[in-house]
Image (cartoon, rainbow, N blue to C red; front, side, top):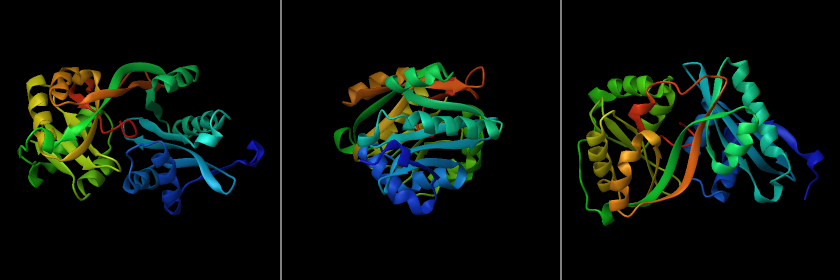
Length: 277
């Protein structure tokens, strides 16, 4: 193994996506090449090269509204516990501060302890659920959001999320296999991931509407499904349990350099994912 002194800091470009995918695949995460491209094109991905390969990453994704997301903190197994994650987190925090942005992230329980020492404060919880769609529950078509509602979807996401991530939502909407069910004001998105279909965001401030949208989403897709349910969406848990889903990982949504969460947290019931918020 190369010595830590030989580890070199780099900034990733599109030519590095295949190497970045090796790291997220090793962690069994759900990111695709298109997801990595979003970070590279609209944010910044910091990395560490050692022993002729990419061994660690961390990314920032600035959003309008004075904040950005920190994610994709990955270190290959042989290089863990050698300070690389902390080293890259320092670059992420500095990079967002240089842009005048507060930092938000979704941390695992272990990560929350580390990030708490850096000044991050927990604001709410999030649980990752997994199960299967379609074949297990019977297909429900639902109403796919019309193209005419696209502008309303983007505007409502801006209001609820609290930052302008139009570039991200447009990217999702442009991908093959992406579906949005509901209407312009109350909707749920599904997109293809590396390992499973990702459900989220789910945007509504009505519990009954949220359950109906989730039922439609689960029934409209076959195969493995994952989704990240925020505290605001805790009322969805019985629906997921009914369909055989299980909650297998928990996160804490944390903030640095701001007082609390932006937007309307009560109306964001399912996240786009811990990497995107």
